[in-house]
Amino acid sequence: MKVPLSEHHDDRNAPQHSTGVNFRRAAVIVPAVILLAAIPLWLLVVSSPVQPQDYPPARLMEDENDSPEDTVLGAAVAAVAVPVVREKKCDVFMGKWVYRPDVPTYYTNETCYAISDQQNCMKFGRPDMEFLKWRWEPDGCELPPFNAAEFAEMARGKSIAFVGDSLGRNHMQSLLCLLSSVDQPEDISLRYTTDYNFKRWYLPKHNLTLGTFWAPFLVRTTDAHGGQTLNGVLTLHLDEPHPSWSAEIGAFDYVIVSTGQWFFRPLVYYRNGRLLGCSACGQDNVTEVSRFQAYRTVLRTTLRAITGRKGCKGSGGGNGGTTFLRTFSPAHFEHGDWTDGGSCPRTRPFGSDKKKLEGYDLEFYVAQVEEFLEAERQARADGSKIRLLDTTRAMLLRPNGHPNRQCNWPKSNVGQADCVHWCLPGPIDTWNELLFYVMKSDRGGKFAQRKLQNLRS
Image (cartoon, rainbow, N blue to C red):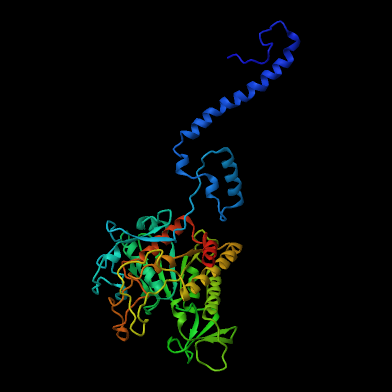
């Protein structure tokens, strides 16, 4: 190929210009060679199965959660306009319920015998089954279905504890039913206690143990006579983890914390052995203390004790395994509450734009997220691991998932509607889809700061 270098390019008898001509020739040829060498690389990129339409430009993926390295990479990639595979960021805890009548339930009350009568809605005649045909759909991405075989293999040789109120037990029973398709759970509770509130199950094929530790206030609690009846005005020792779980928790790899529903009662608070105040206790000369502030202190005490636990085999989380804080699960009583005739008769979920988190539900949720962020900061410094399991938004939208009056409560509760716990099977199975997702992807707290910003905006 001839490249014209000057008006004298045909004058071969002009040696006095050879040095200048060669220099100018090089100045043009070198960029041309570089361009030709870049063509195969360009062809490789454009023929790659990863196409620009599959992944948005890097600048569209940047947000406040990106690390400095991500930001630098994004700027460099945008400058040369080359498509790069980057992980799509998705908050699986925000979304809506979609009607999916084609998706079968994971189990029934006939295939899982671990369902307690209190949540066995099918057994006690719930008239509709439509509540089982709704699936949680996150905004902008997909929540994979629960894979029992993969979960059991991932948790092989480990142990999972559910600490807190009876919703923790509700959660564990869902997980047992989901796993029963790949391993037959054995009730080994009597090896440890005869108390129904403290259950343990063992899955022999996977050497996996599940346990519940019932402590609805998480901290040491006494009644007016110093006993453990949970009747009347109760006293919470805010800085003392409840011994029912604190003495045992070190042996567990994963711990899921669940609490909140019991804090509406009249309560008296002690800290460092001294009276701090009370909430709605009706006692003269006792300082009124916000129940939400007391709840924050309880969470702080609990999360410090659990994330700092020693002795378990570990699950990739330093010396103390992994802790999950499951967020508040709203009740759905209408026309009254638990004690004065309230019920939850709705048969469909709320639309995502029809129900807002507000009132005490919002107060408890904000307290949990803020205390989680502080616990996460401390856990990073200590080499332990804590994750947020945010079930609040999904469950806020499911007034049709409770047992209502289709449950068999103890004699003292006959006729009362249960709009706090969840039918099994039912929307609570989504908690374990979310747990499975967080355990696999090691996510959960990534969007916590953004959640608070959105709530306050």
